[in-house]
Image (tube, rainbow, N blue to C red; front, side, top):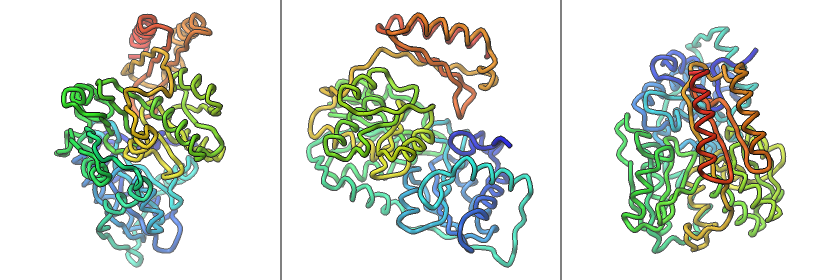
Length: 439
């Protein structure tokens, strides 16, 4: 039986339509009944979407009706979930967020007691339980309570890890995407001594990721040099990824941030296994830089869950994606945008981000094409033939990758070539074909 509800990052869709209160309640019931213990303790956190309160309430009802206690942590970044699980010994965490999607969408993802997202097998078991139906047992109904102090718990973990990082005199601009980081990100930077200016920190339930955050970097890119800031960081809606902007306004993506972190941790003898895990989207320049530094590289499919699986399999510390998901297993068991931003500053050791030399990028172009059915890509001979022809033409000079999104009805077209012009033209040609064939 294949999973029908769960994608690469939980259950996600239009709030109130696909992702209804009824579905949220049923998911929580099924997950709670599979959790260990006679009275599972389940922490629930969310981002700032207006539908989050509805889904949080439904999840809490599902948890309590299945005999568990629901602990409401409020608005917090996704990476707080594993840290709260470890701190309090909870049995399960549920995060309500659709990450970088617009406010109309929402999502539900689960973390097991060990801090890792549920395995494919556990998610399939939840779906099977839904098909079998669920009923509440009045004799075992649990409680719903507010988990007070949860933001401070998360801040304490960040400060414990980065407390020796002195940011006195650093002028930093943060774009919080009107999302889950809007309170805790500025606070930890200030506690470490930075002078902090903040963009997109006034969520209203609908402005999350709206022309801001890590998926809309132009505002931050313009604002950093205009305001004379030394560096800028942009988080996504749920705070599990980050991208940077240097003082000149140049965007620094996850590949470069990961390269900085890998070389830093290796120099500190904290890069377990002397290796790093990346995805097929990672720039070829990253591979070249790691080869020159003697750092092994393992490559996975796109998706932080696949990066994490490979890290666990190999026993390595560091992995990430071009999109800004960076996982440092020395601190957390999922991508953590705030921790990754602080790791970047730790890696720079007082140097300016504009002077970075961790890797030299090969020009890359990436276009997302909205399609009727993202699975149709696998059944298009015309697209497959064009991709192979383009790849043959770039052999030894660059590469091409066309893949379906794991969370949205999109096909991603990526081309790397020796020049910007060639990368742009080839990418435009392939994207146009995908549009004709699949849109």
